[in-house]
Length: 77
Length: 395
Ligand SMILES: Cc1cc2nc3c(=O)[nH]c(=O)nc-3n(C[C@H](O)[C@H](O)[C@H](O)COP(=O)(O)OP(=O)(O)OC[C@H]3O[C@@H](n4cnc5c(N)ncnc54)[C@H](O)[C@@H]3O)c2cc1C
Image 1 (tube, protein in one colour):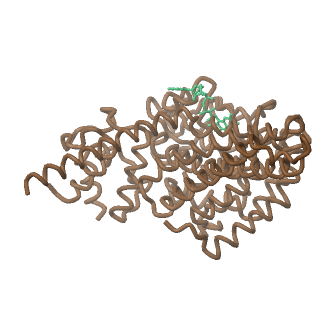
Image 2 (image 1 turned 90 degrees about the horizontal axis):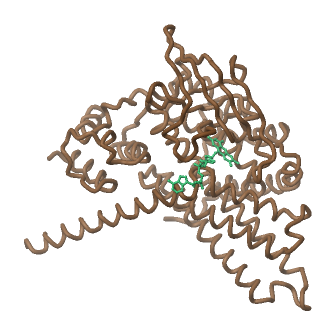
C-alpha cells in the first residue's frame, strides 16, 4: 500500500465505519459520507500535502473514491 | 493552543470595541424598532474596512487572520446581531469567491466587496426548503447560447434588501450549482420582509428570480459543486461568524444583567445579593467563558487549516447559540418588567438569540451531525484500541 493511500484511508476512517472499502468504491454516491465530508476532504488534501484545491480541480473524478483521491494528490505533487 | 492575543490582535480588539461602543450600540435599538439598517451604517462599517476584513490585501482588503475576524464578529455581535449578519452573509460571498472563484471573478468582485461598493448576500433557503437544503427547488437551465435561465425564490435572505450581489444556489438538472446574481438583472426582484421576531434590522428580503439570464461566467465553482463545496465553504464561514457573534450577544446579556442586578433594590438589598439571582449570573459567566473557549479553539484550527475545524466550528456555533439564548433569557428575567420593555436592550437580545438557534444550520441539524461525528470518533478510538491490543499480543 502506498503511503498516500494509507493516509487517505486513515483520514477516511474518521468519517466512515469501513475505511477498508475497495479502492474504486464511490464514496459519495453510496452515501457513505455526509455533506460536510467534501470540504473536510479538501482541507485534508491541502493541509497534508501543501496542495491548493481550486476551481479547476472541481471534478468529481478527483474525489469520488480512495483511488481517485490518491491519483489527484499524486497529479498535484 | 495559545490563548494570548498578539499585540496586533489586542489592538484590533480595542479598535472593534471602541467602534461598536460609539457607532453600533447607540443606534441598535432604534434600528431594531425601525426594522432597518440604514445605508449610512453600512457605509460606515465599510469605511472601517470591516466588510473587507476577509479579503486578501492584494485585492484591497484587510486580510484578517481567523482569530482577529472572530474578535470582530464577537464585538459586532455584542452591539447588534442584525449588523453581525451583514458581516456573516457578505463574508460568505467573499469566502466562496476567494476559495472557488475564477481569477476573473476574484479580480472583478473582491475589490468591490472589500470596499463595500458591492454588498453581498447568500441565497439558499426557499419557501418549501430550509434544513433539507440538498432538495432545493430553484432551477437553472442551460440554454443553446451557453447562458442559464434561472428560476428561483429565496426567502429570509439577510441583507437581501441591500445586496448588489447574491450567491444563489439552484439546481441544473439534479446538480446543485452556485450562481452570482446581480442586482438589476432583468427578472430579479427583491421584496423586503418586515415583522420578524429578531434580526429586525437585518434588511431581510424575499428574492424572486423569474427567467433571469445568467452568463456562464457567473457560476462559482462548477456545475454540481454548488452545495458540497461552495455552500459548504459559505456555511462553514457562516457558522464560525455566528458562533463568535453569539459569544458577543451572550456577553452583552451578561453585562446588562450584572449592571442591573447591582443597582436594582428589592427586599432592601440589590438583586445580586439574592442567591437565586447569583445562580443565574454564575451560569451566565461560566457559559460565556466556555462558549468563548470553543470559538477560540475553532479559530486556532481555522488558522491552521485543520480538517477538524468544520466539526469544531459546528460545535462552537451550537453551544454558543444555546448560551446566547439562555443568557438573554436570564437577563430578561433579572430585569423583570423593565426587561420586557423597549427601555432596555435585553428584550432585543432575547429575540435575536432565538434566531441564532435557527440560522446557519438549526440546532437540531447541528445535534444530528455532532452526535454522528461523536459516534464515528468512538468507532475510530475502538479500532485503534483493538489494533494496539493485537500488536501487544503479537509482541
Ligand atoms: C432572521 C433569519 C435570517 C436568515 N437569513 C438567511 C440567509 O441570509 N440566507 C439563507 O439562505 N437563509 C437564511 N435564513 C433561513 C435559515 O437558514 C433557515 O430558517 C434554516 O435553515 C431552517 O430552515 P427552515 O426555517 O425552513 O426550517 P425547517 O427546515 O422547516 O425546520 C423547522 C424545524 O424543524 C427542525 N427540523 C428540520 N428537520 C429536522 C430533522 N431531520 N430532525 C429534527 N428536527 C428537524 C428544524 O431544526 C426546525 O426547528 C434566515 C432565517 C432567519 C430566521
